[in-house]
Length: 403
Image 1 (cartoon, rainbow, N blue to C red):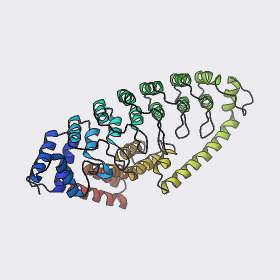
Image 2 (cartoon, one colour; image 1 turned 30 degrees about the vertical axis):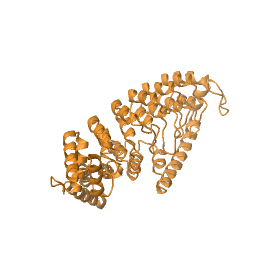
Image 3 (cartoon, helix red, strand yellow; image 1 turned 60 degrees about the horizontal axis):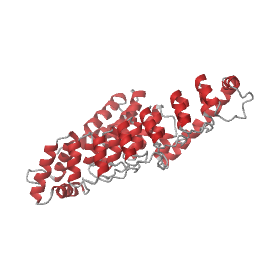
Image 4 (spheres, rainbow, N blue to C red; image 1 turned 45 degrees about the vertical axis):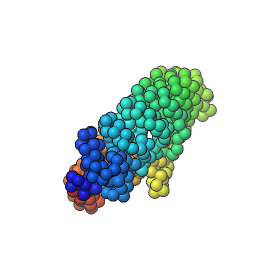
């Protein structure tokens, strides 16, 4: 017990809670009281507290499930004063969670340029990557123009070397319609033909029929002859969507495709809309989907979670559920919750989705919300043992957290 009667575990929880709800005075008081009782500096007192309470370091990413520290959560909530205080007391500005999330990745998603600048002033690794991408990719994907600019101005690489499961910043900006971010990335030298998961930025723009984006990408040097993993160029995609404006733009810059007997705009349109071509494409696409789904299952079993999730059509509820499970297995509660929520929106009466929600919330130590999610699933499937066990465990965790 410290001088205020707190056990190490209880004070551990109180400090974490103060960081999350932005109660700086409470956080300081708890830390100072414990430091005084121990006769040591505040930063050392906090670390010693958690070493005693959980065998791990609070300030170095071990306070929460998945390795999230109070610094991560204070940043996620935008609590600048708490962030500054934690850094002043020795928190590691580059501390990473089990999923390689650093404080910079978290703030890139929220777009808080003051916290970004503060972290960069501490010399954090600007191009460090999670299993999904870099901080620049997160900022671009969330439409945070100012954050993208700050990161680029500080030397963030617009063409990062990506690994399996990662998206490029430019691809992400287009996927989420972050046009100002797209322009900043192109101006900074982002490769307009770089591929992510079988698609280039031009392919994505053709699929979504973004005329202005297509024109801008071509101006930046995008390759119009690139074919997707299902064998289509951007021109063919536009033709299949009957978008004559985009077809007119792309036809004159795309090399002739030998399988088309009449290489003209009219001939192209006739061919892609013929019954024979549609039947051929339908068979081909079904085969490719089954291959991808099989590949995804195999990858999941081999613990290549992100490849499994991202190889499959992402609006299917089962796929969204699997993506949530992938992130949960990686200890990434934020993204696990995001995809579980998307799955719930697609299929709200599916009991399994509430299990996914509960698991994600548990990772984030939101035990009360997790219990509510599991309970909702039980109202839909009262005999589900997995949900029952998870519900009881969430209640137990909640009670233990407030002892």
